Image 1: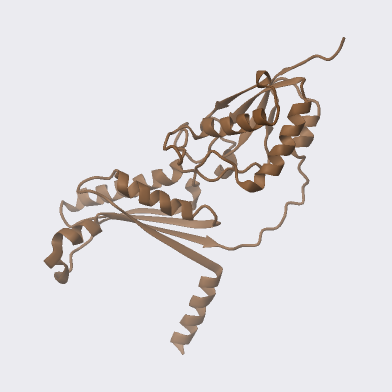
Image 2: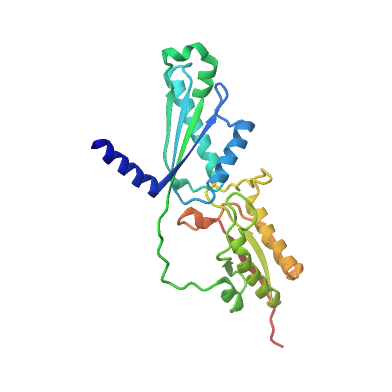
Length: 277
C-alpha cells in the first residue's frame, strides 16, 4: 500500500514539474571550466531556454586526494564557477536556490580497480534544474504600448522601453514572435522624422557592471550586439541612420526589481526638431 501511495505521489510530482540534469567535469586541481566542457554546458543551457525554471541546484565535488579543507574549498570554487556561467548567460541569480561545495567523494572498495576513471568522474559539479508549468494570470493594468508612447509628446532625455521585444536567452537576435511588434515600432520611427535617438542595450544577471557573453560569438558584448541588432533592423526598415546610433550599457543600470526585466532595449531621445516657424 505504501508503495502504491508513493507511486501516485511520484506521478503527480512528475506531471507538475520536470527536472533537467547535467554534470560538468574538471581537470585535476582546477576549477575553471575547460573548452570541451564549456561547449557541452552551452548545449545544456540551450535546452533550458524554452522552459519556465523554478529552481537551479548546484553541487561541487572533488576526488579523494588532498586535505579535507582543500577539497571543500576546491569543490565550492567549482560550484561557484558554474554559477558564474549561468549568470554570464543571463540566467537569473535568484533561480539558484542551492549552491554548495560537498568536498571529496569517498572511494568505494570496488572502485579502486579503475582509480583514474573514478577520480575523473568525481571531479565534477552536479546541476539539477527544476521547471514548473504554472498558469499565470494576466495583469489587469493596461500598459501603453511602445508605439503609443513613441507617437506621443517626447522630449530630450526621455527613455522608451521597447516592450514585448524578447531576445533569445544569451543571443543578440529577437525571437520570431517579437518581429511584428518590432515592425510596428519601426513604422512609427520612420514617420517620426522630428526625433533623434540612441538605441540602448541592457543585460541582466551578470556580475557587477559586466556585459554578458553573446553565445553565438563567445564575445562579452551582448548588450552592444542587441542594440546593434535593433539599430540594423530599423535601418533596413527605412529609419534615417543620421537620426540614430546605438550603444551597449552592459548591466550599469539595473531596474531594481526582478533581474529578468533588466534584459531590455530602450530608446533614449537625444534631439527633438522644433517644428514651430
